[in-house]
Image (cartoon, rainbow over all chains, first blue to last red; front, side, top):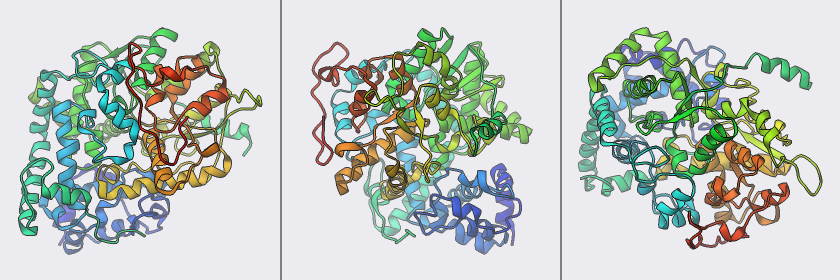
Length: 234
Length: 356
């Protein structure tokens, strides 16, 4: 008992995020996620401070740790200076480290985020890039986005951008040297190891679920990106 | 509360904003969705205020969206941020100005962590040197781009051609301001006005002649929620948050929304479009949406810049009702033109919302 709590305690965010929760529920009252999902950050803080490994493992495998939007409204309001949002970040990190994230529908979505936002960073230098964004995956973009996609170079030139060219400006082409430094940092500091874990644990889960798993937007990606079978809403 | 009382409280939440010589850090989201706002920020600083600002081609993401969707370890984000500081140091700058609230929150969180846990700073220096051979100094001043516009809001007003006033009535425009969560929720002392009375946008609105609307869900999140928007299955969270705000602000009949964050103008714009298409519900006048702007776009309108130079044509909600109220001239034929005036066609008609 207590080994997982000790691991969480090595995360500076956990140390900052949980002192002694008095269970007042202020965080839940202010939480946007709690007004949408069947979610209660007060309970997460209370469960973690039991320091019980079995309780923490259940959290690491749960849907509930994936409901938070990390807006950090709880940081502002807690009368004891706790931050449930930081506790959640620590739990999510440990869940991915130990492979428990694939045991929940919401946790399995980490593969889709790694293959979109994550890979964008090393390909384009930024988390988001017009070339990777279509109204197929983002129908909420509306007709104006389709028009931009049909006239990408001209629209960004019109608005002072420097689309896919060297030099300064919006959407410029990031140099190979800078992309190389970014990748070296990702290698040195554990981001690539995390991605490898996300891929490996997801591949095992895909085999268990009978879904095709390779790369990009494969069958498993499409499944975790769109499926919403559990009634999560409050 | 008496206005004098608010001013007294706000005095406790003022912060130092460097006067000149800025290192600019671009935003992942704004480069794609509001490139005209970033261009306008640089134009205002260089051409109107005669400031020195460096737009570094070697800058990259701070990893903020990846960090807050939990695919990036803290050590990675710290070291990427350290690389930005190294680029800034090498270029001879000390004042960092991120064009993104998430980045501003990331820089603030990391500087606080390095202060509270000095061993993490030493470890980061080791990581960065090993990965890139770079070394860095800490910035002397970190402020968000909106803080700079706030600092010079009266100079912008003095140079302006237009005011946030309804020309047909002479009354101030009624304006909803939306701050963005990571501006001051995590570190209230780093935001103008703190988390309780954020003043960064309200100060601009007041200087430029408008009236700020107070409404029940004024401080509610726009609904980005990182993974809650990035993954299609979760997007109901995002839409619901924005809808909650629209329903709350509707009775106050806002003329426009001004926003602080990269994601907020995007969500408050696009989710109005989605609600109109799905439910036939619109929140503005005459079957229109409520126009949504970045603070640079509003500053640009006040200064008399061409609306299509600002990028107002890449919004999904039409901005023309607001332009008409302010008495700003515009050429509808140039709205969707290319850089040399060439015809680029135009977006498809919407089903439920009237196109102008």
